[in-house]
Amino acid sequence: MTEKPQLKHYGEILEQLKTYFPVPVSNPIMDGYFVHTISNFLDYVDKLKSTAPLLGGQQKIHYELSFKERFPEKMSSVEQVIKLLVNYCQGTMICAHPNTQVNVIPPSTIPSITATIAGAIYNPNIISDEYSAYFAEAEIQSIAMLSDLIGYDPELAGGFFTFGGTGTILYGCKLAIEKLFEGKAMKEGIREDIKIVASELSHYSRLNVAGWLGVGTDNLIAIPTTSDNQMSLIALEEYLRRAFESGEKVAAILATLGTTDAFGLDDLAGIVTLRNNLAKEFNLKHPPHIHADAVIGWAWLVFKDYDFANNPLCFEAQTLQAIQLSLKYISSLNLADSLGIDFHKTGYAPYICSAFLTKNRNDLSLISRKPQQMPYLYQWGQYHPGIYTLESSRQGSTALAALANIRLLGKEGYRVLIGHIVAMAQILRRKLENYSFIQVLNANNYGPVTLFRVYPKNINALEEFQRELKDPGYQKQLLEYNRYNRCLFDCIHERTMRGQGVLLSWTDLYQHTDYSKNTSISAFKSFIISPWTDLKALDLVVEQIVLGCQEVCCV
Ligand SMILES: *Cc1c(COP(=O)(O)O)cnc(C)c1O
Image 1 (spheres, protein in one colour):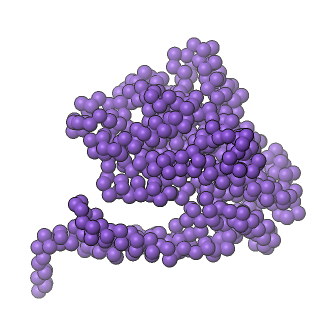
Image 2: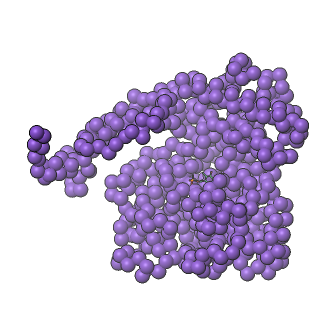
């Protein structure tokens, strides 16, 4: 005989369940419980911190066991689940850690985290101000302040927050397509081949964008880059001339300002001039739309009106020069027809926090739906971005987190954060260049990222690297050096995980060789983004490389 189940009226459980949520009406005791819960969580996580740049050290992950997880029958408690969450934080990289130089993943400021919590509690949906009230205003104000920073006319420019840098590129290309087809592609689809042009070092999200928009990745044109990782204007002109002469349709040119691996900067002003001249020459009715992928480089704009002569923040001469050389290209962002900004990269905000801006907000009418197509929305209120966004629901906290950081840091704070990471990267380069067996690869890119390649101690790196680039007969040796670098990287990585080094990252493809698209040169990558990165951490990077070279495992 099976036992009779114990009966419990659901109302009793409901009372308990209410304690799982923040209270909707004022109740300081329950608010105290909420704060206490978060505070407990922070205490637990704090215990996971060490000299290693990870919470709780490296984790061995067993996905096989994960597949065996089944949906639980019973409720759990807030306390139990909070402890469970702490387990899931283990092994996570601490991006603010002085010993982290991994990628463009920033620590978030306290106000931007608070904005994110506000959004998490109240779920303001900026599909329309009917649901999000002043969160919608935060979006409008953030876009206005960013337009001002860029040099767009805030009265004419438009924009909104979206799902990542990838989303900004998607919007840029979608606008480009609709401009080309006068707004008809939305309804009729794309009925012919059109091209999207970008540098070969532009972010791979272009592949998603071309694929998902129905352009097709075969219609992506990759323009070769110079040794400074910049799109070759000569090659771009050659391609565009050929395209226009043969009647090919070019919807968009993507200019990257701050490539992900090397901080390469495309010559946006040059690209715009070229587009304008060719549009005239070929009498183009719809010249290509130019979208600037500035998701990393935008933050340098805070230096546009810095007093470089008096240098009130006392940056070193070398830092000033590096910033000015980057600004030479970044300050032209106002010339782009649209652009993308990631606050979750060089803006020091939590994921996902990306802004898409267009110089001319009227362009958004090309991607707008009619309100009649969304009958249950837009009954009151005045700001309805849901009419033109791809997303339906959008989290209002993203706009608020961006606004929080803009207000918190201003140009002054961003200058210090960006200035510091550039200064640190400059010093790291100088330190690495002291060793004849280390080759800094992106020497003429002046951002926070340094790519370098290491050779055995008796080797002259510069000569060897030149040969690797140019000599097809040297391919076998090149692959051997790739292996050597990877081995060294793995040794250092392993040591770092034990708390004895700086966490770096790796790129399989820094550059192709001059002679073949199939031979890639791999490299170490240091991306400095933390305000806690200091000289000690830089010394540690050099030390671990030099020490690693002496180890037998990689000979
Ligand atoms: C990171 C990055 C992207 C993609 O942005 P997500 O926010 O990751 O979607 C696009 N372009 C560049 C240059 C990037 O560095």
